[in-house]
Image 1 (cartoon, helix red, strand yellow):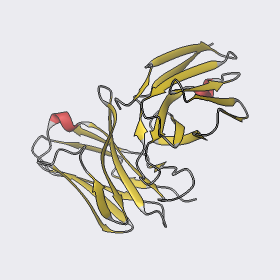
Image 2: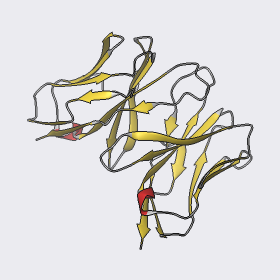
Image 3: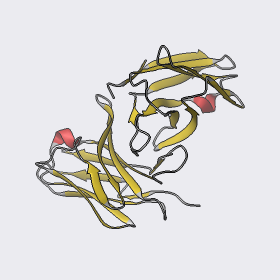
Length: 115
Length: 112
């Protein structure tokens, strides 16, 4: 049963701390997306990768956020330093570029609370 | 997603039909999608329609696409309590790009 996994599922941290969220895309998928969901802003695309190369990170605050794919099985999203306004649910999704209708498969999300 | 707009809430009685509407801005969009998000979970593709189609039916779901008005709708027949969720409309603008643009989501609640 192939699915996107994310760790941790929940994270509570204090302002100023570093937060690292991890995502394992579905094996064989070559695109990875990071989204943030809040009540006020809805679903925002932060960054996405194709074949491990970042294609678009225009939705990401560059001064504190960074996204990487150390290898094809791991994507990371880091926030340093974290702020209360970063509290949200962060979703990772993966897909296969060039597939017929480009379905994105979402992970269960990481719920981040910054105090 | 300012490019894709949908109303935030819809309440329907169990057994009635639900119709969720969406407008998008890019007439060159190739695919349009409906994703469903259940409480505490990620989004899951519910159905999609290619831009050269007007309608697609899949069991209780009917998708209508009006390209002239850039309007997409999702009709759920015989709405059940399990249909309670947030429904996201989304568009794929560029045939060569992988990313899709999501709307803000419509929260569907079911009344007994």
